[in-house]
Amino acid sequence: MPLTNNVIIKLNEITTLVEDKNNLKESEIEEIKTIFRGMIESGERYDLDDIESWFENEGSWQDKNSRVRVVNLAHYVQNKFQQTLKLNIISDDDCGCGD
Image (cartoon, rainbow, N blue to C red):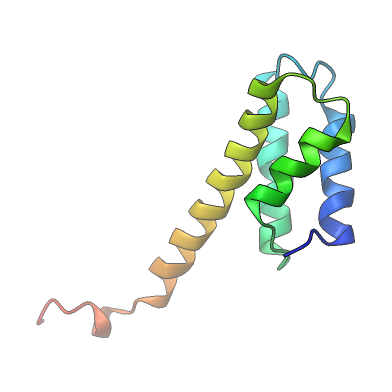
């Protein structure tokens, strides 16, 4: 799935946010997670391979470890949202516990 314009805008926001692309600060990491969480909660979907490719081709992210870290954050937020969603769908009647 190609990246939507909204996702690309947010990736540019992340690029602008991070001062030193070779050394992510803890505050920047938290803000990056917030940006990805906001995308997911607003219904935007992204493919992690496309995110990784975008950062590789963007030009200012020379350090591979920093690019991988941002992709891992995107993956973490995506998985956490999906797990939370699954937990919300299961009701007490469907737990299979026999009570």
